[in-house]
Length: 140
Image (cartoon, rainbow, N blue to C red; front, side, top):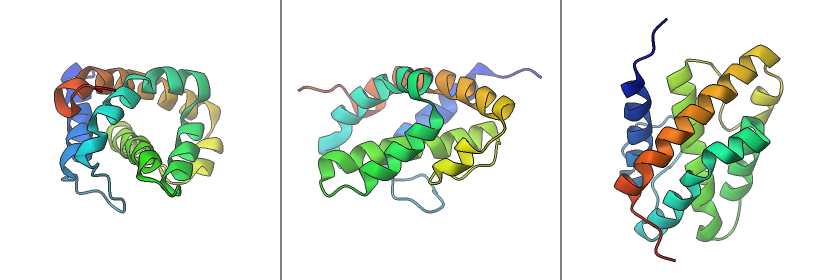
């Protein structure tokens, strides 16, 4: 099977545009960020590949849930970024899992999880490339 590398760009760009504009057709989550959080989100995206390689997708899903449940908007934007990334990964990989349920990832068979984790790191690198163009740079 050959993979068109432009598909990574298309998926990453669409996910970041969804964070910026909220136009994603998402199933059951609000991913739109307030403009004040775009730069911080861009910086957060820069570290996604390292986060996933260190902690894994199951922890990313758990952190998304934790940040979304937080009281302040300064943490909720992180949950929105992580959750949108997971939704984009699920769609791109065609591997069925619920991005809101870390147990789906924890209980996934190891070969499937390892392959998905590797794909996620590649997708995260593409997100990192497009983040400054779509969300801007963090000025803080």
